[in-house]
Image 1 (cartoon, rainbow, N blue to C red):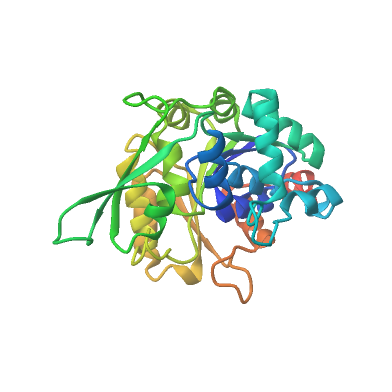
Image 2 (cartoon, rainbow, N blue to C red; image 1 turned 30 degrees about the vertical axis):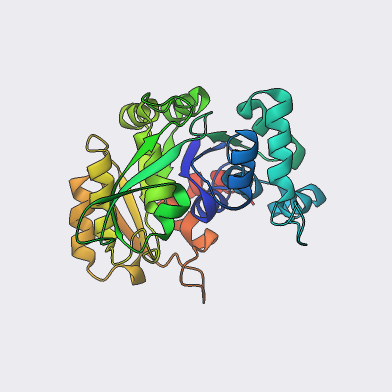
Length: 322
C-alpha cells in the first residue's frame, strides 16, 4: 500500500506512527511555512527551508522506532545560553545538507538513509513559504491580516481563511515540490491531518499543483480530525467545523473517509452529514492515547485506518509491520 500523509509537526508524526503499523511504503509531505524557534532562526539566517517539521517526520519514520543512536542525536536539542541554544542537531544537519547539496529533496533523502527510514520525507514546496490569515476579534470587529505561522497559531482572534505567499517570488503562486505531486498522484491512500488546522493541514491545499493532484488522484482520501480544538487557531471549533473550513479552502476536493475520536464528537450525526457533504463516511472510534487528551494512540489509529480502508483480515496480516 502506497500511503502519502500531508501535514506537519506532532499531528503528522501521529499519522506516520500509525501508518508504520500498516505499510513500509510511506511518503510524508511536509509544510514549509514555519517561522518560529530553531527553524525560524535558520530560515532567516540562511534563507533555507525551515527544517523542524521535516526533522519530526524523519524521526517518525526512523528505524527501530527512533531508538538508534543517530535518531537520538538527530532529535537532541542544545541548551545553554549561547548561539546554539534551542537548536536541534537534526535541524542543523538538515540545514547543512541543504546547503552542501543545493537541493532539499536530495538532502532529505540522504538524512533518511542516515536514519535508516523506510519511506520518504518531502517538502510540499522547495521554497520557504509564508502564511497570511484573515482574522477577526482583534480590533473593533474589523478583519485583520496577520502573517507568519507563529502569529497565526497564537492569535487571540478567530482565524477565518488563510493564503500562502512566496516571499522569494512576490506575486507568484507557491510552487509545489514535483516529487510530492508525483507521490500524491501515484498513491493508494492519501491522509490529511491531524495537526494545526490552519498552519499545518490547510496550507497543502493552497499550493496549486499539489491541490490539483489531491483533486485528481485516484487514491482513497482520508481526513483525520484533531482530538481537541487548538487555542488560537480553532478555539471553539466543532469537528464538523473543521470539515467546513476544509471545504471552503478546497471546494473541489472530495474525501472518502473522516476519522475522529468518538469522545471528541459531541454530535455524531452532524459530523456524519459534514463528511457526507465531502463525499465521505465518518468513522468514530477511541483513538486517543490513554490519559493524554490531545495525542493519538498509534495502534488504535492504525486500527481505525484499517476499518476506514476496508481491509480484509488477510490484508491486515499482510500489511502489518512493527
